[in-house]
Image (tube, rainbow, N blue to C red; front, side, top):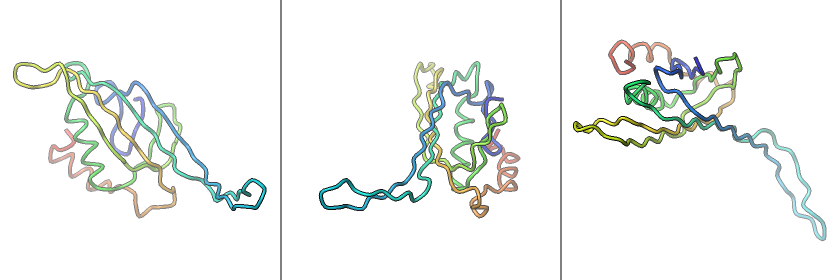
Length: 147
């Protein structure tokens, strides 16, 4: 297991990513002053975003169904915990966007290569109201959406 996002596990058989980028910001508001630089006041943490990029080879790794599973999770608008395989807990994240590009098509139109970029945005860990519903996720899995 490379990483888990809620019920979704990033691994060779699902959606292995080749690169993880994390950008963290902090908010400092400026107050203009005459003849001097603005004075800054620390307002707290800003956005914390993670971008995962990877390439799927459906004959060897996960395929379209795995990206569809992530889309179904994003459709809920819920936040899920993001935990790296080594145990690092990043916090609660929502899916901001998912981009995919298909190439190397077979005669039936199926792609042999699917590149993806998944963008996640952190929410405050105390926002339990945003947590994903495990019951809904299990129901989708049982209906085959998460297959």
